[in-house]
Length: 265
Image (cartoon, rainbow, N blue to C red; front, top):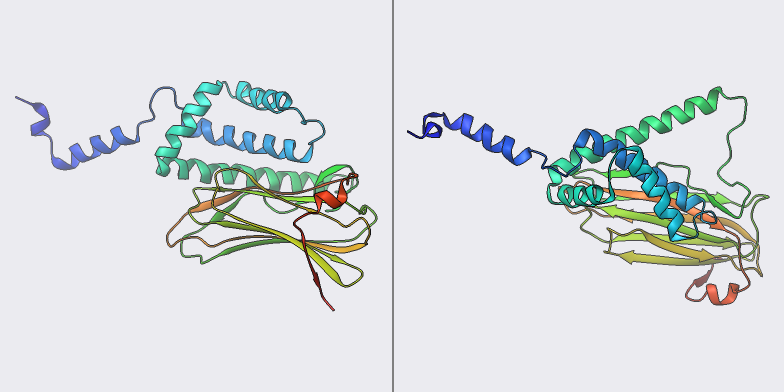
């Protein structure tokens, strides 16, 4: 006699659910995947803010491999795990929520240690050829029934600004279904503004929008915006947010092609 026929329907349902939720061999389990992804995201932020040191792809690959080795995961296991989690969104959501908690705890810990340190923390606008000026969280969760998420940053001119500086706003959608809009606006002391914008549905890739300051003018303010309008009931993320400044080059005019100018007064 088939013993399964003797089991109550509730028990059979529980067994079926357990079988569906089982993590297959070769896939990194959630309790290991969350801290691994947190370190991967931190590594990506390091690459974004240290573009000179990570100019070559081999250096970027070496950094990623070092993170994987630290967690005892191979590249094949990591790639297959991403594929599996992408097809099992409930598990991916669990992992993503844990990643967010880990990153937020790290931010709090860094702020606490910074407050206790005798060394003053750096301001949003710092010196250097390539620096990340984004001071907010690099990961934002889009909750259900929230009609829109609007992220912005404003920078004012200080001693570290130079004519011809380049500002690159970056972001990546995770499980997003609608387009993401990025925009950068620079105001000048002659009453004009320049702006560039990007509206894209290719959200699984990191999107970059660059604005190059006019080297013949003095910029007084820079504003960056990220806007996402989520479909109803969608739970998604805006990830890898950064605003990187690099020093200008000699091709200022050519680099500024496509930027639009308006007059404020």
